[in-house]
Image 1 (cartoon, rainbow, N blue to C red):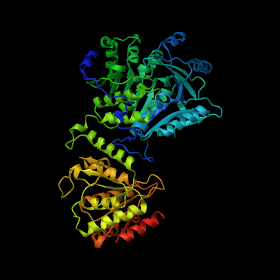
Image 2: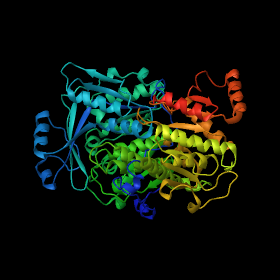
Image 3: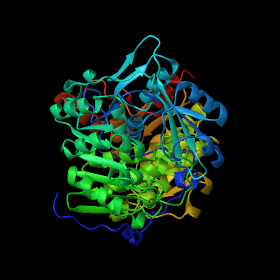
Image 4: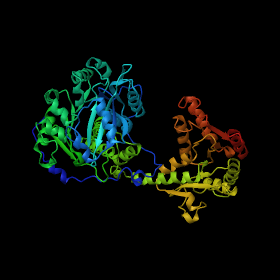
Length: 614
């Protein structure tokens, strides 16, 4: 592992603490209607093997409850730990706590759910589940999160699924009381190398030691299949109980990455005080980190609200925890830390970036009850994943693009979706195409009665908008600072009302918003995309729409007509080009079915009348 490097944990104080806004703060979400947008490298393909398989020997359902400090006085065992109880004891505990939440749980399941649902990583669970109602809840929850459950074996006609009471104190610390002794579990002879072929990482945890031989069988199968293995030490009680076989496995070289929290780290090196708060002077954590790094390629020790430290060979990094929010429940914090860290490993991120992603995911899950990050939480995670990094882009701030897009969506929701017109900004009011386009705008508005949308500029956009205004119908525009071949107009010079206009500095939000303005959300919606004579920008929008149709990203639920208005043969050359592409086989038959060509205003109106059966 190379030379030992002395590590002082008080060096964390020299790092900048990442400040973030809480998940529940609407300002951090970009509004309630903001859609989660992620720029992840991995795509899903059901024909590919999982990238990660997590070992969940038995399915577990978590019951989480907030309790007063006095509640713990009547419990055996140490606060913050995990002590097994029987089914009757579990029921009595639930009766005492009052209100509680119920979710699919288990360390491996929490990590798998985070990888699959939050990071789009192909992830599967390997384990066993009962046929009772709790088992059905567990499987449906995993499937809903995108986890592959094909390696979960359903056993027994009247089998029992494990359950666990998670007692959460006022600081968010959780104390576990699992009831697993009668639960259906995976057996060592049920794990094979064939199940793991093509998998990159197999995730195991110390809880598997409760199944004799299962840990060793899984590691052997992973090694035979050529997989890397990541191991969680699980809890300080597990380390205390199974220190000898655990140390032997870690020292064997079969474990490539290991995760431990501060209490587990102390316990690993012998007799550490699991309730100690003096991390900065705790040499046992330092010794444990060095020992783990000696045994494994990557060693990580999480430090709760202080962050984490990690080593890979002689490389050592520190990451402070994210701050700026209230901690609700720490259940699953370590599991979701592992999900973020593993995502970084899978995408070849630096060790520092892996630690950052782990801390970010852990910070998201502690802001709500239970070991599952909410949809709002994942939006929060991905917003902060890229925060600060986009500042290096020459074109400017991603945050500015987001603000512009949200302003566009707000206007669309206010005005309503309708007919979107595209066309040249260069043609003047005395041009025959301008006159015809104004007449068309009026005729279509009178027929459909829906709002008219354009880029808010001059030329064909102005003509269609003025026609809709002639008909007394609503018009709105998504304006860019400068149209091709024109000078910038002030808002005072615009034909649009200020409250019906959004100005965009960036072209991308404008393009996305104009497409959205023509989407049919319901069968009764009457929208269309109409292409008047135009130049390069108009061609860009036209082919983008066709590409969206080709990829089934538009019109899958309710198709929208795309009409090319071929005044005086303006688009004849384009139509010849489309035929040339079809003749050469670069586009397929049927990919332009939504495109219709009409030569006159009357033909356009008649087509829309028939399309919407008016």
